[in-house]
Image (cartoon, rainbow, N blue to C red; front, side, top):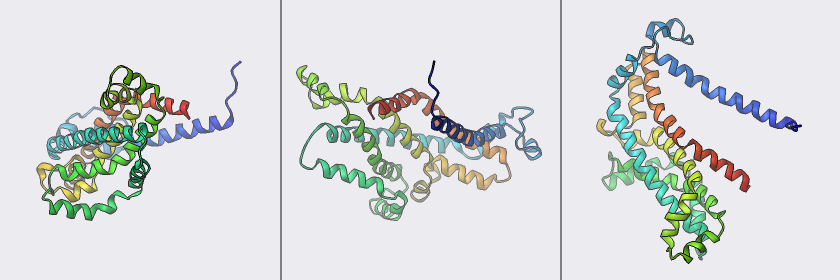
Length: 276
């Protein structure tokens, strides 16, 4: 007979279930509301739509100029993601697999970086970008996003790589592989679960970041999606259905990205639990 699960397991499942419902219900009603007409939404905000108004999405896309904002957010997010994960993986590899005199001090610097409030540095970074003529450019967002997320990326990847047995490198050296070949061909492939975690975290933050984009970017042609949606709300405040359609459009890439990496993310959690 199967053993009964302890009461705290049941309590944890109930708590997680309620937490999931608490987060899913607002998203569900936002998506439902995006398909309604204004009169339907005004009459009953929580009822299901009588007819799906796909035109809300087309109108929201046009009114908010979302093609430009969407492209800017996608470009900045992808470039920042690649640079952050690549630099973070290299740093984590050398911190976790090699012993040298300044290793502890360098690792401590990355940990300190996690303690610095990001938005407390907004004014100094603004002045730096202004002085080096990078204000109102893609780099004015890519560089701060990369710098502030290297710490967490290195922290997660370093802990994962440190658990690998030394036999991996030894077998690579026997086969004639160098340091970078071992990194690309051996270490990096088996780090995919941890990479999925940092990729999702970095993607979500970069995609949703608002304050740095608001301060660093002034040109309409360079604004990101959060800025576009904020402007949209100011222009079309009375149209709740169009606002919900715009928010749903902004949410779709995050959901797709998560679903693509979900398997690796779950594998990483399971691997971490077994190692612990």
